[in-house]
Image 1 (cartoon, rainbow over the protein chains, first blue to last red):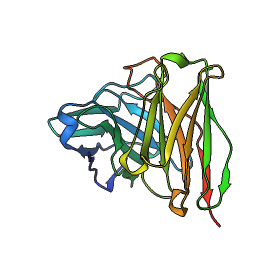
Image 2 (image 1 turned 90 degrees about the vertical axis):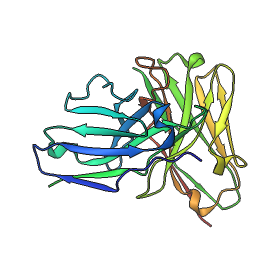
Image 3 (image 1 turned 45 degrees about the horizontal axis):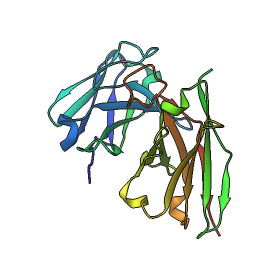
Length: 108
Length: 121
């Protein structure tokens, strides 16, 4: 079965850049999506199709990567960016989806 | 206003079934795809499966294949997920999600508010 691996936690100081990685065998062939989730709320899409930003998402959020590892970068991190971040992608056939284990971003 | 509104919380006994609904507003329902995701308290998001509305084609994650059914009612723009033979570890918030149509077709940017399903004897 297809799996996506993320670090459990990332901590940064305000104003620094946070980088959250996601690795998986199918990522070289399938798009990745990133979601932010805050306690008690539904996930919010912050990056789609590897590196595109939905309307309303600050330019501080960007996606990059190649091969089997991708990265969500958040520059000039603010306290409001704290939350859980999940990568989301398809299996190699594109017929099912999977989420990464999630990364808790802490702003120190 | 484009939105997904899910049915209310459910309390079920082990071995029974639950059906969660997801009603879409201002969405091109017939041309859409609905995915279902669950999240146990304090745990990760878990993909349950999806349904392509136009064809009724469904796919579920391997661990749910024997117990989950996805359906839709185009007359009411509503998608449904039925989970059978409930166990205590099915206790979770269940979300539906769909593409708004603003972005690449596989982009699930619209989410319902979530439905809490509690399985307890």
